[in-house]
Image (cartoon, rainbow, N blue to C red; front, side, top):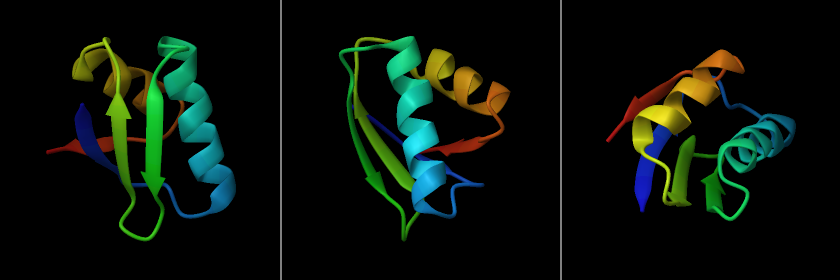
Length: 65
């Protein structure tokens, strides 16, 4: 599992878009979004760099933990 903060995620629409981007990289990923803390927890076989690069490309830069 990887966990990271998504800096520009501010609403339900953003959370949905972040989830779609992650599923675009790994369709089997399990995604848990905490909108209040802007955190995403993802169970995936894809490495963190791949996920964060895809999110940054979609306009959602991250802070890895």
